[in-house]
Image (cartoon, rainbow, N blue to C red; front, side):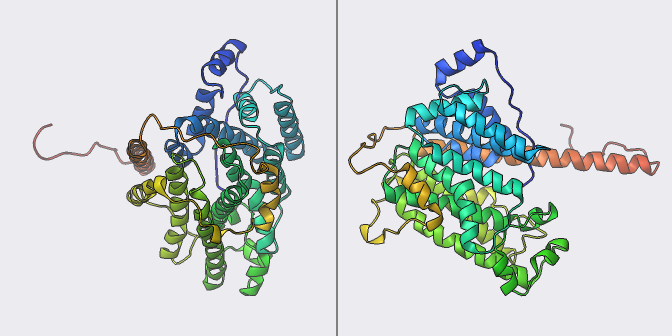
Length: 394
């Protein structure tokens, strides 16, 4: 949904691979480095998870990202998809290719009995992207969201050893809600790349011709009304997802609630910006993230879901829930394990990480601005002199 740099994954030597696998079981370091270079937000958020879940979550993310990049940056997407499906086949045959993400995923599959249908659904969503599909109705768009994000929600529930039907349904709700938020936030960016994910029927109801608008993606009240409807559709799913958080292991709840709160806040930022995601990209400030992290910390003591508030799985997610759930009594969830660090300690570390990432971005922006000033001065025959500081010597 947004611009990215291709991930770099190369086969590692057998000795290095064996040492990494023996130490962590999930080729942890290699996958963490891949994630660090891919999604700063996900990297920071992962630090809120207890360590026993963090490694498998990073392994899942690493494979998902490599798969996504393999499609996005390929000149032959049909071949790329065929290669990905072969890699997945080998993962489930316990004969992964010599890539860290493949070995890491194979370890997760063995450890957690991760259903093939969940990962295959993700690849199917990437295939829909490669085909340039558009979505007529919100239900059609939810079917896409189920594949590229609901599947990830279900996989995360599995590695948390939470496989009850209601908990899985709510995890998938959260994934689809996040994907709808992504789409609402990135309307302009997607349009500039020739992509359109908004429900076409909603656009026509607002008086817009989808093809004509894509040729000239401008912001007005009509497109704002479509974005508003999409945010409201996501909010419904965010509210539903709340009823599943209490069914997660106690030490996992704050991290998942933090992700839910921060992502939902993107919708609030869009509303503050007048729903203009054509010319602006909504960003949740570091200060606001800190406040939401503090609010999420109370999720550890959330009561289990109220049985009167159970909802059927979203139709688009039903196949994921059926694939991932276990029959009642078939397997007991592992007992809560106390984390080596409290959530407050992990939240404080994450807050510091957000601050460091912000400082790094500011430094890069300053360097770019300086380079632009120097280029301008040189092109106009000026001498670029260092600034003069008046005051006490330092």
